[in-house]
Length: 335
Ligand code: EPU
Image 1: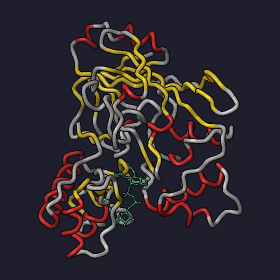
Image 2: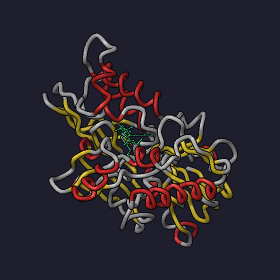
Image 3: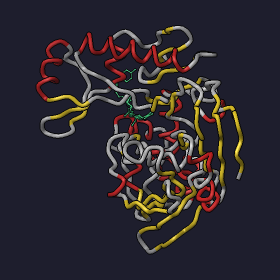
Image 4: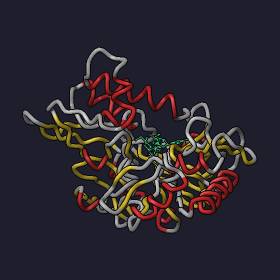
């Protein structure tokens, strides 16, 4: 456990922004977090949990306490012929959990390979990729509230939705995820319906957890920049939901417009497509830019500050509204 003052957050945000936290609290034991939350520093300052900061845009230094979990453990809670219940510390790097499950032939996490971030952050924004969301394998989330009480939220109580949960809404800054319990299956079953996976799997002799993981990693590496090389936070925007009528009117002008059916009346349009059509792919504004291979990803080309990246995102939103009359909104949390 340690409490630091004026601590650099450069290695705690994947945009690579040179911001600081007024206080930085790091814990290994949940009891230390409980004790800390009773101190004056905790009671008199804004609190925010940060894992690797892979979904955050800091527009300024954080004038409060950044809470960082460093409890890196895996604990098998229960097991039968069909499934395991695995409890994992919030500090574990997300992809290490995926690798751990794949090695043991436990099904469910493989499509979420190589998503940056930590286990504690995964439920906050209900991370998702290639037809799977983390809510599909979460049994419960444990954490500590502002009264220092340990709470367990069942999957249902987390109010998971597309890149959203209760932790991003009413519990933001008031509840700190310490552990997540996952339910993984021992029965062989794959989720291969998402566009590119089947094509990527043709490069391997068999379909197994290991090859699905490899295929997903290959797709991600071909499209998404490595934050260690080029600062970014994955998809900057959510894919907007529009009505069937809106889609029909767009199809008049853009017959090839891609979309995913959500319900009978609603579809999801890839924001990356809208941004590319609006002419932003590969464009720069100051030291912020739109990635060359995936228009949904904004990158820090060097020493950009958070406001430059925010300005770029606002300019993109205005262009998309002007051209399509569709409001896109950030998936990334802007602080
Ligand atoms: N597209 C373009 N131009 C672009 C990018 C995309 O035209 O520059 C179009 C293409 O038609 C493509 C379609 O958009 O077929 C969808 O693109 P892609 O499969 O790359 O997925 P996405 O909608 O861009 C979403 C998630 C990603 C996730 C992938 C795969 C959101 C906001 N993003 O991206 O999540 O990895 O699907 O499941 O839902 C993240 O959240 O950070 C993230 C990377």
